[in-house]
Image (cartoon, rainbow, N blue to C red; front, side, top):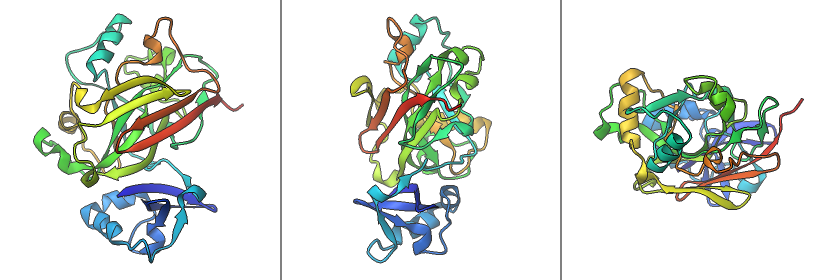
Length: 289
């Protein structure tokens, strides 16, 4: 399934995409919740109930007539791993970044969450705005101490992420959190593709286009730490909850690593594509007064 959070005529609900239509799941079945976190918290039973909703008999809207929101607009956690592709590590070291011999995690505060096609603000306090194309993993099962070989069992599905970063503010904190958490710098979407529809999440191609030009392109199998290793590592420390988002790392080609650096400008359009998942597209605009 392709699960969405959408708005239509002032009402927000969850749905599934069937061709060019969005099936309103909450309206079709009163037993289904109206929020994505509520649906995911119900586990496989509720997901199966959502699959069983007959698209020919349920309320539906043309996809073009709805506003797609962030699929999980209110995750309890949005965690991201740094320097998880070999060539990106090389360019980071070249820029003077110390790369430890372990997984490097940081928080993107959830107030950064943004819709798949909504504008991203150029902060008033910086002109060092940068892009990072990433595969996002959505947790589907409350879990702790998950072995890597069992990690796929706790994944609800996958989405597209752009870990937009404010580089000068990122350097102000050893945790990187400040520069990763400006409002609007967490566009995600356009939907969650459930795990059963992704034969191998380590065999996907992702790319970033800036104004149509390809800046980043890699296969997810090039990750240093696979998504399963990531889940095992994180769940050693903390309980992962349904709806939590893990951004699994960006490949080389970020603007900060170019010579000279090529930071984003107002009017630039970022488009992140992941084959088999979908794409998100966000324009950079001035931060409102």
